[in-house]
Image (tube, rainbow, N blue to C red):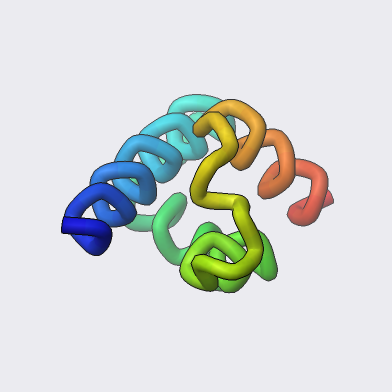
Length: 65
């Protein structure tokens, strides 16, 4: 069940990223997977999974700058 919840969270964040950057979802997914934020999100010990999607999106955007 934890994997399904994480998958949905990643999907939602990717859609938000695509909308924010005005790019297609595939490109947003590529960008997202290349970030340290993604690595932290997939590590349950980081606690990032508990943060809001908007907070995580802001981390990604800051990292991409």
